[in-house]
Length: 133
Picture: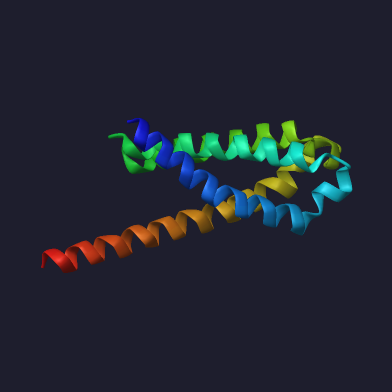
């Protein structure tokens, strides 16, 4: 079980950091807010670990639709909390603008990452079936 936890954390970090770095450059958040770059990185590092732990839901026997719903809700909550902790609500004043700026970007990234993981799984299944058959 511990190996599985560290595997999920590794995947979360491997996916989360390039996305976070790209977003910081694209949105220029670190320049606009005057926040310490290390504060942003530390907060999003922690968020990446939380995202990976939330992904453990897929290792349960729950129906896939329910697992996806729980995962999506947990990731949105984590993104909201991390945005607050990183000081992004100061950028999006009043703070409800977070829903217009961050949430759409979140959904795009969520779909892209989910699609890549889905396609990777299909590719691996095809390779295994080829070896068996």
